Length: 282
Ligand code: AMP
Image (cartoon, rainbow, N blue to C red; front, side, top):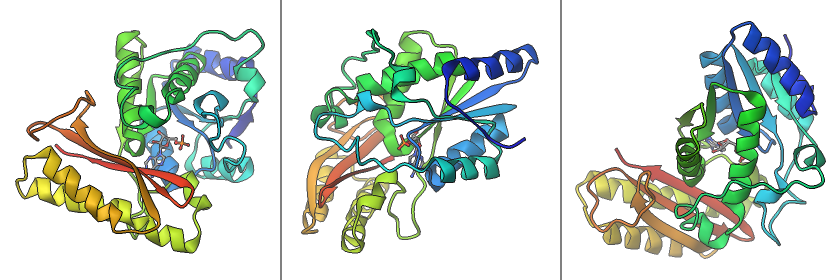
């Protein structure tokens, strides 16, 4: 069967109801489209672990803040459909914003605390938008499992939190970061980078690798690792730090001493483009 492009909630529900009747398991991969190998790794895993797979392809307006890149965010439904088809996903759900947010829409999912740190500081309404759309997608898809990339580590932690808090009946599967050969984490937003900026952007993965090595070599001070990552990024003239943080995984609370698993996360502007990257220790 080739991948079907579905535009309405009602049509997704028709498929889902039939699949449920047939006793089939369902995997969901939420995306904003312009799919790359990072997304593909999630979709492949979903196809391997479920009888049916829905990929949502929706640039969710309510997770963008004022002045962010909602209008310019890259879109290519045809290429996305071809990729999903080659992997064996059953449906691409590509609704219009009015289908997801009809007139009178007034309910949101707000997670406190862990949405207010890291990306939440500069993007205060972002996770409210993410959690609201993801809850809708969970309900629409009735999925048994949903797949999220560690590339957006805070998003993964926040989704796990509301699934637990609100008793959603779904398993959240975290998947590793897929990178270019040179180390740059794959992202739809990499398309904004000029060749010079793309080179400069390598400072994120390079600095994080250095920090990871410090921890592997026995460094226990979060401040020492953080300072080293900051000064490494500051050496790149095209890079401007939004944040560099080392926090507990997956509480996202500050740590002084690195004892349990930590998330080292960075957000850095390269030119006008804001890029994120991270690693998580065992
Ligand atoms: P997006 O389309 O950027 O909203 O991403 C959709 C999903 O793909 C999210 O769960 C992301 O974390 C995941 N993702 C994006 N880039 C990567 C990557 N380089 N490696 C792994 N997962 C990724």
